[in-house]
Length: 318
Image (cartoon, rainbow, N blue to C red; front, side, top):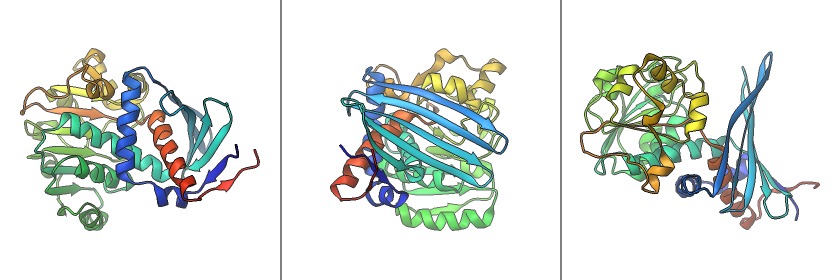
């Protein structure tokens, strides 16, 4: 079987949020039921560049794969490689910037379906980048959202972002001028920033809020403060092993003595009913994501199938 290369343009042509949400549910279900293996991220660095690699395998789609990417001062370059589990042969190499944005948003969308109050209508968002955009898109497809308020340190970019999200999600979206404005009186709060320190005060959270915290995958960074952890009644993550390696938000709380790893559940186990996402309407719930290769592989497989149906992709010489 010929392997194919899919460009970023090919991926964008066939991938969308409904596909990503379905792939996220499959990925987390397979993890929870033992039908998938996820290997946390590893990093290799030399001056000026870091190579990040993460792998996964699925018995459901019979695919193995690796997501690898480099980060430099100029930005990041993402690739996903898929291998056929039955033949051991490569199937596809695809550029994976947009794919990564979709899968990260989809994990938060799934967490909202499982952990937020069903009638959640008001969202506060920290961040105005590409990840924040797909976070809001997924959340609006998972709950009956009626209003979004966005805070970003760059007020001009924040206003432009609000206009774009209003059109993308068909939900009124406005910029706000302080972190507490974005965090208080909200049903759902999203943190999708590059901040190394907490972006709001946990005391400003309203009972019943669900948080999606996705901006950091490094031990030296934390978007939420200790009070947010203390006030959270239910805490879930995408993968416990990955978060123990990378979730600075959690590790800071562990070191401060206000969190134990035994309190942190996994979203897949909430999905299959083994663990609890929310018990009461007034519970504050928290979902922390550092990003999983199994999501990239499951979504990447569906993108590959769609692309081949559309006749997209360039054949590779192996």
